[in-house]
Image 1: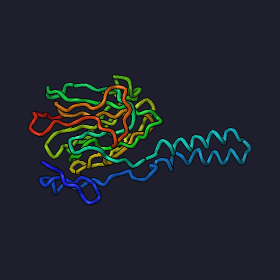
Image 2: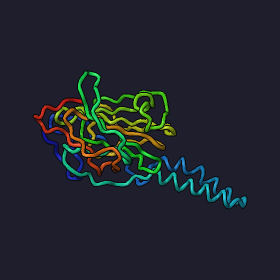
Image 3: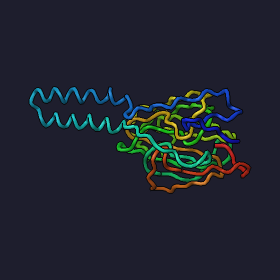
Image 4: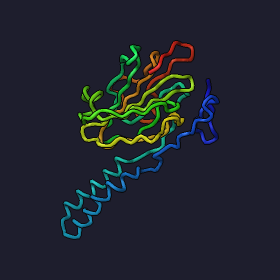
Length: 244
């Protein structure tokens, strides 16, 4: 089943999901608004330090302000491929590529991405689909590259159903110093492939869980860019795909 593209280039719901409200991509500003709040504190302190003659401290605080703006940068990206191409949900380094067991006993392909504090932390939808579930869980803040973080850390799982009926999950996982996960879509909304939909503050991990039969296009150690790097290829219709 195909997907229709609007004049703006955004992927619209297929005819069978024509009544599904389309998620309005956000955040879209060049620098996420969180930076205004978090960057204001060191900026004010830098000004105060300058007035008091504490030049060195002032430069350090100004550096902190610049870092906050850098951390919350939100670049636009060209989305490659077609509807079967799964794009990276985040910038970072691939730390996990392999099959996992699903709760129903089946198998799925999981690709994990580690985001350092120097990566863009805005998350993007890896594929176009309707949101069928949003689940939050976990209560720990282990380092994102710690294997235990997959199950223990605070996380948010967004489950999408594609036009072909496949289930794809995107899991935002906090890290050692991450303390906030933002996920804007609501259940029932249609999210376009590559659309920005949320973020994680200060170091984290983002996983994608794909139907069995999906083919990875990346390997461990690869560097990827959210929205513009292809992670995998979904099974072609009729090739015996499963659900994630």
